[in-house]
Picture 1 (cartoon, rainbow, N blue to C red):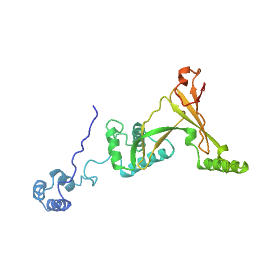
Picture 2 (cartoon, rainbow, N blue to C red):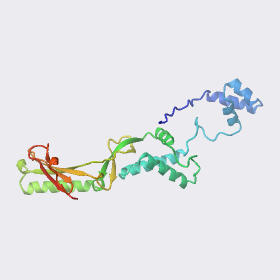
Picture 3 (tube, rainbow, N blue to C red):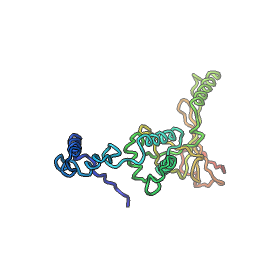
Picture 4 (spheres, one colour):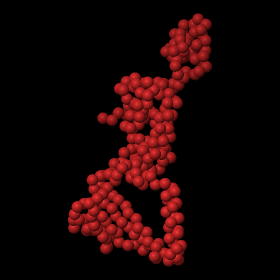
Length: 254
């Protein structure tokens, strides 16, 4: 059964002024128990402050990593997103585990590795990071640069001018291909909060079966019948039923 963590109330039951007065009273000879009752400060809190046992200022249990160390983890996750390899929950936990080992903090987590509870607490402290469902994208598409896109448009403009096609849109056709896989994994990954769509680079298309559809249309809006290519050794007749009128069908072994 999934665990639903209910955070305990960690608000102070006392104010800082009363704490200072209680500490001063203890320093002047008053017992910790008596000062605790007089100034309405918890005994354990007053005892810790009076005996210099307080190692951090925040209320509640301290985080496993320091603020600076957690910022490094956050920046690492954002950098990997920019490189097209956003981290899943398991990958981020493994990254934090390795980071703890590099910091010589191998005993930081009782179980030897961060838990999902730790991850959820980390995300609450670093709200620039959120978990979003990712979409796979082929590496060759992810590697496309703005320079390559600009060169393509420059070449397109050159072809239109050289062939005097600016005023003849009926002779300008564009062909595009889209692919559909039978098995696409949409794992949740850590990305920046402002990310609209999370992409995760992968080597291939994924899945065992892959179907491509070719579309071609003119600049006037005239659309040619689509052309469907199945990844298979044979083309079965039942695969060629139900498409738009005059749709072409074929198969490819690769």
